[in-house]
Image (cartoon, rainbow, N blue to C red; front, side):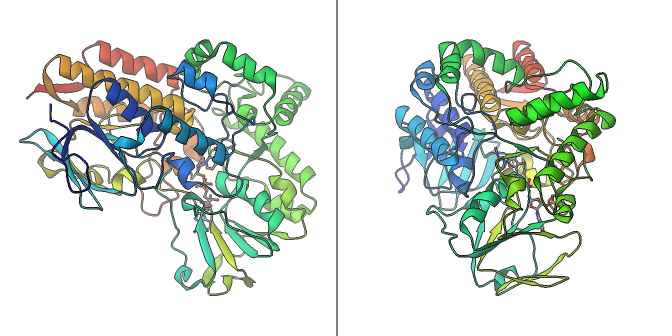
Length: 541
Ligand code: NAP
């Protein structure tokens, strides 16, 4: 086992057992578990602080759409008892406070190198080590490399002609400045109506002189009905957190999962059920019937319910029609959860610009020119999303055996085994990688499951005197086929979403997350481990 010394000029070791890339929820937990396992570890993090997505996404209105009592680590009973959430859906600053609290409480910072971006990771076959390089000139050797780089962390700035000519301020929601942006009296253009743009719209609208929302594709938005957390809810969770967490490990997030199909019940009953969930707020709406994700006709009933609400909420019929999604099944793009989104379009200072009718010609120094007219703006907000799931990994030059590049290997879409390891890249793990439940479940649950599995795997290697573990190509092929087959049973592939890479020009169209559910997936991972890491090749030094 390499010693955590000598040191580089930066004060960090040149050789450790484990390099972890990213200090978001995944990287922090990975560091904690590696230390518990007695492994020397070093984390590289591009930001100045911990928190990952919650560090970068400081845009107005940012909050989690998984309820706060569920969106937290479960590994420490003391932590989950001590921490108090204030709202049903936690706002970004509170989640960032939580991440900082965890970093302090478990003394994580001393092994995290901030403001350092990993640029390359190369497997040295002779030494059986990864050589990890950073933009600060670090070159660190490690037996294992854990990529905790996040699924939605590579912000995508679209190729809009003239963007560089814009003379005002321009911000991407996924790389928001540390200091709050003051929109008071400003004319603002917001491009993008996914979860980020939809959350930001009503908040920016309340300060700005004028907000133009540039929409290419409307999304389905359900109300959050956020509010202060009441004492009974907190007590319900804290009185028996371990049991609730055990259940969450099987089902993901707690929703009311229906047993009947949408068309199995009379029309009035179906409407009542949608209305009840709409009033309750949150993602629970999508689980009103068991076949909403599976059957187009069932899905149409939910979609039409939302379109009817849009017509009620938005006063101008043309605007309501433009805001109504018709080109993808509800839920096949991540459902958006927000407060007062549709209502914002009734404000005199908010205008929807329908890019299907008037596409953007160019960004100009004073605003945005469409095919119809020029919109004069002072501030541009890009809520244009991410190169999801693979973007952050492929931003690094990762090379496995015989110089095999991950970029080349994944040119036709990500290929791996269990979303955890890639054939040809020994001892390199991806936390919540493509091919795992990841973005389709409460991310914290997915993260803990992966990190626990990786920790057990490394321990197993060390106890058995093995040096490397590597996905077998045949197992990888079978897993990729299985991930695709599962997705094809659903309506997910019918949308041009970031789930399939459709938002990135030239990106291979492959459905990336695993839709089979966290419980089933966990069982598979546990069985693989119990069967001596079936589907992996383990080798001695
Ligand atoms: P997104 O869902 O990918 O949305 C990006 C938006 O930008 C889309 O409306 C897209 O239009 C538009 N766009 C991209 N390029 C454009 C261009 N050149 N011209 C005009 N419009 C363009 O990204 P996001 O809103 O950041 O959300 C990403 C994911 O992050 C979410 O799906 C969710 O999983 C997560 N998230 C969660 C929360 C939460 O927990 N509440 C909050 C924010 C984000 P098209 O659809 O036409 O491509």
